[in-house]
Length: 160
Image 1 (tube, rainbow, N blue to C red):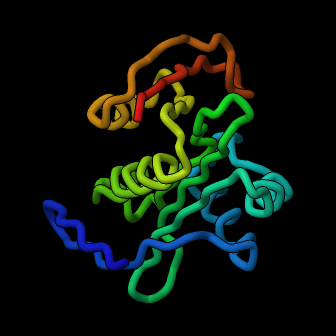
Image 2: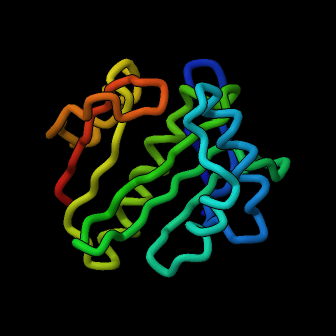
């Protein structure tokens, strides 16, 4: 699938596809770039996620074959799709890539019979919260000291 997303200043072209275990180091390194505040996953967490049958993972690659964005969701035991990680390389933000990945994840989860999706977001991350609200997510709970640096988070949920 080809991705073409207009932006005020530039157009992004790339490819949306699954993430494979062979791309473990690449997704882990991108996650470290996206989450410099200590909230990045450990490499072994990505290994676990990418080898689990209950995980759906997608990426966007640029035309020069660089991974520039990713999303990972887990189908939990209660049948809820849980977005555990989403990241866009800093130099590729504000181009609609996170929105594209979230819509693709919703489609993928629906195709597996999932009817509810949830995620957590830092209460200070106003841009992400606005995006999630625009896509139909609603805050259902404030998570006190959810993040390792002591920041609160919101749990946001959307029916599919």
